[in-house]
Amino acid sequence: MKLYFSIICLALVAFVGCKKTNKTNNAFLGGEIINATDNFIVLSMEDKVIDTIKLDKTNRFKYKVENLTPGFYTIKYGGEMQMVLLEPNDSIMLRVNTFEFDESLVFTGVGAKKNNYFINEFLQNEIEDKRIFKYCQLNSKAFSHRIDSIKTYKDNKLKRFQEKYNPSDLFNKIAQANIDYSYFSRKEVYPFIHYGKNKNDIIKSLPKDFYAYRKDIDYNNNFHKDYFIYNNFLKYNFNNLALERHINHCGAKEFNRKALCFNLDKLKLIDSIITIPTVKNKLLYMNTFNFLNKNDNTENNKAVLKSFLEKSTNEENKVAITALVKTLDKLKTGNTFPDITVLNVKNEENLINNLINRPTAIYFWSNKFYDHFKHSHNKVKELKDKYPEVDFIAINIDNKASKNWMYSLNKNSYPLEREFQLNDVKKDKDILAIHPMTKVFVLNKNQKIVHSNTNMFASNFEQQLLAIVSK
Image: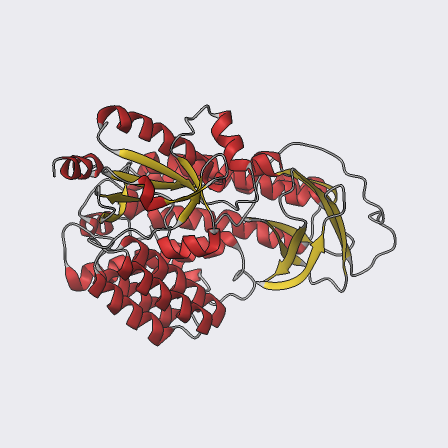
């Protein structure tokens, strides 16, 4: 799920009542949804729903936020989420096309400049993150030089913005934190992405001041607890802290991210360091969820579930993780693939197991992960030519009320013959435990699961296909 800022394209929307007058503790929010698939948006703050706002007949909305608490508000529409910084007297409008959500969003109006600043920062971070893998192959000194230069550039850019627009203290605090925690996150991922398999040697080779900033980190910061980049930092930081602890008592030369003891160490660290319940519960849930969805060992699942249940105080999360473990047990090797109903491009219902009479790979995609959509379909085209004995079934997991999936397929001229969409999206996603998006099921001709969580981009995927074809 994408939780931060999207991008560009300018369009003004007339919005009655947004004119800035005398100072109040209110703000106005409005906009237009092009190619709307739902007739409402949900406005929330800190995971608490403020209101459900209906779209009018022209798919526009307007809303007055009274007794405003300055900070980030989340706009949820369909499966998308967008954050906007609201302060007293802001009158902010947005316009978005659901066919290309990320490529069409823009803010206008009073308060737009600060939000567009964050949009640009987010876009720049996305570009830089794609280069981080390359940077992480450098030695630690050269790597630090690269990301230190990026941070200096961003600090100077923020300073110019502040001199020109004189933004609020709240904006300045958030903007600086975004720069800092983005920088810290890149430091934290270095040992994991660096090509060396012996993580112990990599950790020992780092300069003593490589993580000097850690001494100033407030792990129980109420101000930052709901901000994406801060939470992203915590994710990478606890991975790294657990790695260091794992190396000390395990001593394995080649690090295995799926190792049970590494993941148990991570849950223990989160429990011992974080005291804010919402932050602790979110981190415990996220790390447990990710481990379970990447692990194939049922006994390890039980051990991690036990640790999670002992530490989490969120009853809803406990129910969800317990249910996930039961679901994954049903999807283990040798079991029959769940006979869910899928829709073809003509909107006709099909029981999926009726489509399987040869070795089959089932993969998933969503418009929310557009790069993966294109990469996976291009990869399958290549694999079809190499392995004609294998069928490949693509399943879109977006809201079926949306026609965006057909728009994306036609736009890219992909064949439609083996393209399907989930019929009951919420239920079927739970049944199949579709996470991560790269997850692929490999089945034999009898609809039996051979691999429940493989990846078509993995180095051993073709070996898995060869093995099933040869049987």
